[in-house]
Length: 319
Length: 262
Image (cartoon, rainbow over all chains, first blue to last red; front, side, top):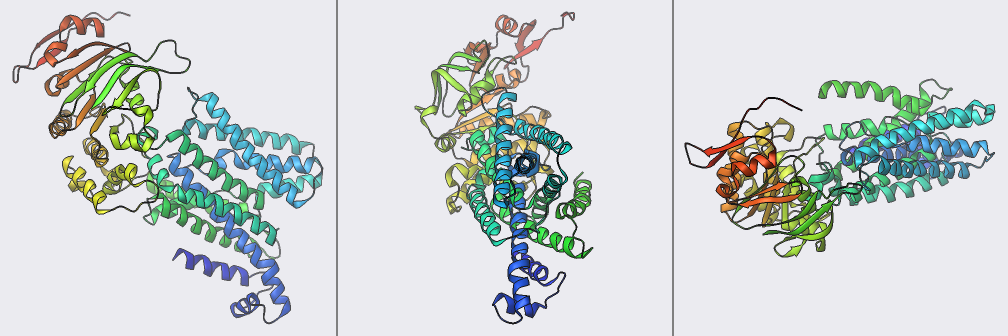
């Protein structure tokens, strides 16, 4: 059902836009038949963008589901780990030193995101009482690293040139507009790898969600396993940030939708969260392209506008 | 059988060892109680049994095998522990929750077999929570939740069971129910090690009491041997008398009043 929903919304997203193509036209174009303009629009413009959006959503959804379980916190989401801040810092630094190549900036963002995670891990280790970093300290450390990164961005932007500013803003707002097949392939590979690993270790997340002592009593090395989930989730988030900038609230909201559908064990939960996240981001990107056309709205703003009210309703229902 | 030999547990940066040369045996078919003032090392012993604390000296063994020589999964198949605290963030159905006790046997991918289903059914019935199987964990009372947690530990099908303060926050009836459950589990052949503050209840139910004080065994033996006013007074640093329970004759500790002073 989730797969069908994703495919339907993806078809609509490929069809609709500045130039609308009929659903039949889309199918023809995908097979390489019919109007060459339609083929170009569908194959080179819309399809990569839709696939990129779906991958970003899948990565964020799966990452959020795993993190909420492992950190035992319904408010956890990938961006709380400081990944977003770190990735943005990486991108802004790349802009600042005059890098303009797309691939290099993506790489810098990715490196920044991962670096932030390692800093958070180190901070948690210092903050914790022992040499082991417990997950709650990790969460706090992520928030602190994120705040520091934001401050660093402000300082960098305060003296930036307008061009740099625009590039940095793009990161902050999130967008699937610059989708290329290369970027899609790169993102798909990282998401399959890290997402697949999360699905592989999903039962450990079930056990981790009972707390560290209980996890230990069930034969799971809580610190190691928690750190592994944290790193994989961060990898997913960093990959999405490097491909499409900051897109908030998907990782936060999507796991709650999946849980509301009755999914409790993390293997189906992580997979479902990936599918729901993909559907949501493709729909949000469609909205971003079409609502105020020809002006394009920032995707990150759309997900936040949808996500915040949804989350408030959730919060009210549960309390 | 759980056997501690001259066990030392220390935490990085701490001046004193949390556990400083403790030896005792928690035998099969017996309820052994680990008691003592706050900070006397009870929870550190539980941590050592979970391999969550460093053991610089001595050993902790389950049925003759040192816990450090076992993998985490092997350990979880040898000793089931019900930790003191558990903050589950998301509710699950009681049966699913108890099924997590099969994780040490199932691992990451193996599908549950009949044997697993049977172990879960048995655990639910042993802990007297079959009726709750379909409920969500966040809809349980304190006493029900503790019994469900014990059921999860029983589903692990280990020869040894450790419970860390299982009756904190429970009223008299639920407290008694848990103690009766632990006693019947010991009689069924498990080695049950109970960490508890409730000296008077422990004195009625336990076969052996190990009384800790500042990381060392202050005294151990049968309830009558351990529950002596002079010893308890010096360990707890508070005037007490020990009398006899009028109903069953078990030793009872009665702390006396004294003027408040810092």
